[in-house]
Image 1 (tube, rainbow, N blue to C red):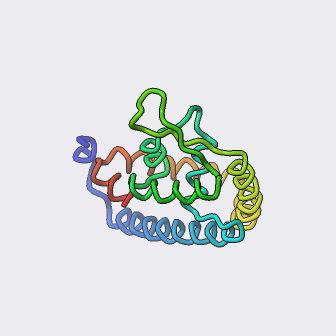
Image 2: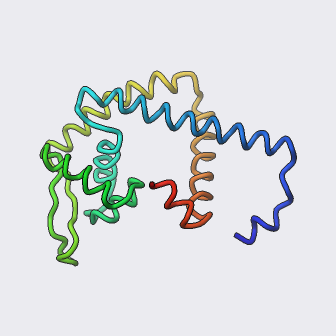
Length: 166
């Protein structure tokens, strides 16, 4: 946090650029999520359900519900509802954690792996359309910029991270 104070104040141009960046990023996030929801609807899958399944598939080890909620970026009670719907469809299973009987680990089922595969086919098509005109270099720049902003947002303070989850 101290380095924020040590930075010179932004110029008028920087203020305008940062404002425009924030507006465009918010608009893009809303549109991107809406397109994902629309493309997953035929699979009866929501953005949050897809994110949950994706985090489970990417995890190196079994995730406890609390850690899964943090990885997806949602509150615990919201995660419970998402998992309830996924369990109901036999896409995931909960198991009592070996290290803590009060906690549950979450596991993808074969049906969960298959729906994730189908979802990825649909989302691959979406990405092909939305990102078709961007070069590899432009995508690399976007990935670096978004990664940097994500790191800064996480480091800014817990109150900011909690607000993003709500």
